[in-house]
Length: 167
Image 1 (tube, rainbow, N blue to C red):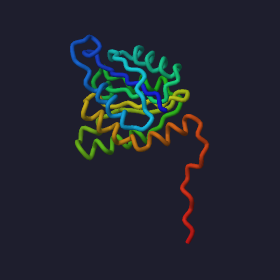
Image 2 (cartoon, rainbow, N blue to C red):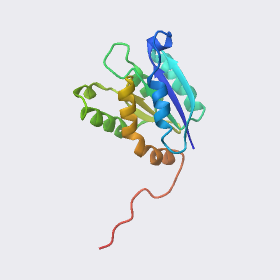
Image 3 (cartoon, rainbow, N blue to C red):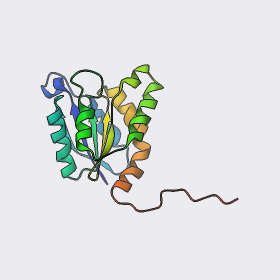
C-alpha cells in the first residue's frame, strides 16, 4: 500500500475565496494507482515556511508519496519548488523532465513549469501544476513509473534490470 498526501498551495483556496479543484481531482486520479490511498490532504497559502512545514510533517509521518499542486510557475509568490528543495535530500529529475516534455506536447506554456521532484527520508515528493487539467495530465504522465519507484524507496531489493535476451 502507498500512503499518499496531497498538498494544495494556493493563497485564494487557503483563504476560502476559491474552491480547491486540483486537490480532489488528484485524489480521484491517484486512486487509479493500485494500492494508493490518500491519507492526508491540506491547503496552504503560497508561503514557503508553511509549505515546508506541511511537507516535513508528512515526511515525518512516513507518507510514501506527497503530491503538491500549485505554486510552480513564474509568479512572484510561486515558491513551491524552493520549499520542496529545502525539504528533499535527493532530487529525482526524471519526473519533472517527463512532465515538462508531456506538457510541451500540449502547450508551449509547459516550459514555464519550475516543478521539482525528490526524496526526503522514504517519501517521494512531486510538484504538480495548480491548474486542475494540467495537474491531472502531469500525474497521469508519471503514474506508470510510481509503483516501481515507490517500491524501491520502501526497500525493495529485487533486480531492476530486465533479463538479457539470449541470441
